[in-house]
Length: 167
Image 1 (cartoon, one colour):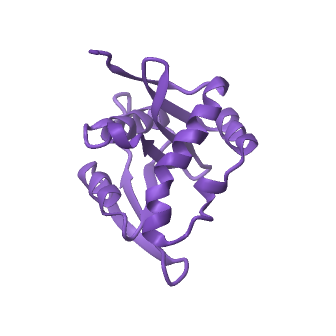
Image 2 (image 1 turned 45 degrees about the horizontal axis):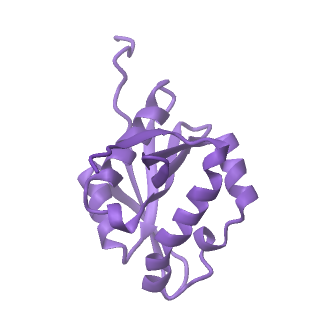
């Protein structure tokens, strides 16, 4: 008892734990939308390993166990796209999702390249929508995927860095 959760960069050794956690966490989303063929439930391990090599992936650990994760990357236009923010069901509602979101924003925005942050979730994912809005995100668009799912895209501007050039 008394262990604290630590957030750090994921390593290739974390891939299997992240994939298992992703599978667990996206069960509720699959049930909510009646679709168990969603990408987070069908993603192969090799694809996740590629994401680890190419993008920014953070994990939250409780001891040796990965209990949360988030991924992101900054594109050529300076949009930091954040995705697959997952928290183990037993660790939810304790602020860990917000901590991970802040950590990935800090990591992606550290070099000043990110002009804005963007993420998406399903229209019925009320908890996700509340979390993102609480952290300053606002809805910028929706895309109807099918009769069951509309994706809601939310965004916010990146904070000006401490070393921004003065005009």
